[in-house]
Length: 279
Image (tube, rainbow, N blue to C red; front, side):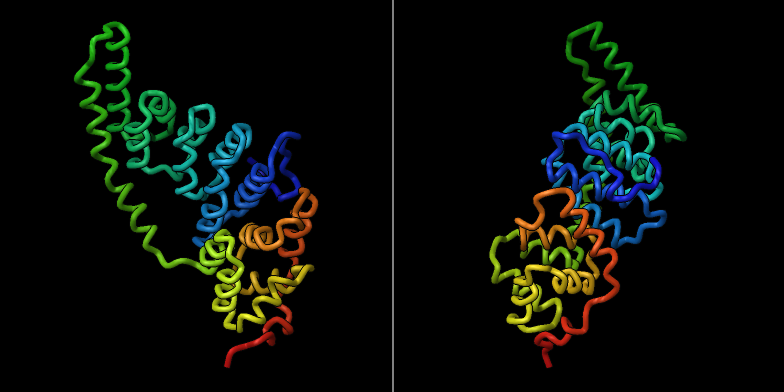
């Protein structure tokens, strides 16, 4: 997939706000040649919750785009690979984010359909290829003889036993310290304005009256500048801004305008840094 910008994605007329945001975020990420760890974490944090609300068309678009991505976000790819084959096949065949242990886990969880797609990968580990061949053989035997086969469950058990490192890796990731964005996202989605105000004040090292003024600004210019100071990406800033001012983003044009203004913003105005700075 070629590099694209936010304005170039083309959702269908029936696409939802979640579809449009998910397409835009993934398209923007795929245009980054060497994403940083923070950028990878950002796209995973933004996109993963949107998958539940995305249409099949958008899920297929996202999977196809990430299958061509040179440095794809691993957690997002693994999440998409749990979808049916009509969505995840490009990732199973091509994605560089899937390690051998991931491939084994996917075969163990989803069976022959996913295995046949994985079999098409270039330079597939011979041990995985042999396990897939074994699954195919057992499946053909069961098709000819409906009686339960003990060999197939044994093969699947071998695969499931090799899935433990993936679970441990996920547990380690969950123990990482939350970023400013994760703290703000949790506060914004709590629906409690007091929590959001206190969180923003703490992160910016200003008092809560100054934080309240930032959140109440109808133009959102100072809020956007403050979010940029905290290192939030355009997608992350949009989520916080839309949670704070939901009526400002009724159309794709208003979303695009916010993102373009945010990306063009050079630095936080000095007036923001003077608002209630703590001694």
